[in-house]
Length: 296
Image (cartoon, rainbow, N blue to C red):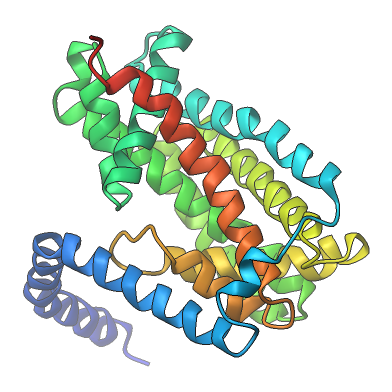
């Protein structure tokens, strides 16, 4: 096999595809708000269609927690979840200097408020930078810090997909994803803040997954004995599907993906997913509003 020919052919294809990719990327950036709202509306319509065959919207109001202890545990894990994100942001935004925890908390919570109002995730980064009092974050350095943090969290989503695929018996796919994850980890660790940022991202995903499993158990969508073997791979599938959308979307997408992954447990799975979103996102946004709402 002529390796020189293959290398040359690959280089030519890469150069030829650059204008197309650049144009597509610019189009997505220009229309990201419309795409975000459109995706959310389609997702909500999909959830409504599925629920129509399972008692309709009224079934949601009739769903009650069956394990209150699990719901309490979800609430107890919220500060752990957010604390890990704050620690990661503090590390990335410090520019080599240890920043006060109070400042990092204020910026992350303010970002949560902006993201809720968005309703797309890029508003999170804008909110953090707007709430920051650090001069170095009011430049491209702040955007890079947020971008590396988001990339690390996206990497963690796919890293946790590796054991999920293995648990489902898809060992070939698990090995392929593992290879990509290892290569990406090396790039991110060397260019995006270090291995500690990746560890924090992995830890935050683990806490989130525990919250999701507990919510599903709390609303009767999942038996406690099946939480790890059945629940965790499906959660990984939901989050990989959600993160694969090439533009940011916030509302309805998780619920729609959850109805696909946990289709035998409706409508409790929709309620559990929405409750978790409310705790982690709406609860955080409410606290962040204290920082961005002008004082009378």
